[in-house]
Image 1 (cartoon, one colour):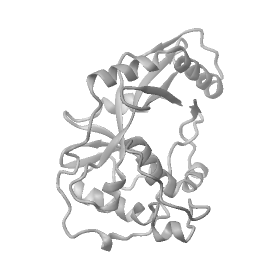
Image 2 (tube, rainbow, N blue to C red; image 1 turned 30 degrees about the vertical axis):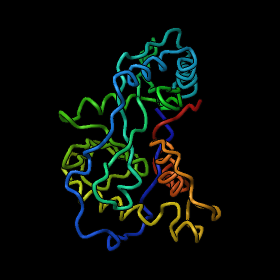
Image 3 (cartoon, one colour; image 1 turned 45 degrees about the vertical axis):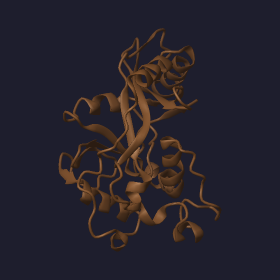
Length: 257
């Protein structure tokens, strides 16, 4: 199956490890905030609404070239976290991830699978934000250690088991460490800071109109939403690099809302 990537490449990022503090927290995953049981249930319900099912049908139609007569939505939501911009900046004692979405698998009557992405849109409100082909989130979540959460590093389409003391790479389009290797959080923080720390909004890189910044501008306003913060602070700083990765490897196709 041909699938468009949903990642940004960090392969062109220069190392700036010298900017990091000498000592980093050993348990930076502490404080990762999960959705409440009510929020998780609400996200799963959104995935079963007609509009969300319509998105799934569009994905099956566009990617798999099928017209399913029936789509079954999983009753389980997989909570997905994405890199915390403050963690990337090297700030001490912040969690490595912030809440990104809840992934719910959609299965066509022919057996093909897609993933509905439910994202928070205000207190207690969730919205079907898009559909990705395949069911990576569901598959990878089954490999998590007890107490771990699923962390996405979008720049390399990397998926990690995030524990209290370390991360373990599960898969990536541009792996920066061996799959299955435990990397202490302090080391992982240095790694992502090296890759992306000087590409954040408000950096000299942005002011000099580096890759991912067509023009200079004010730093995005902090909306208070973990998803909004992540999108503005990380994806915005390396957006054009997604094209580089797309040319290297086409991965997952997204049907947006």
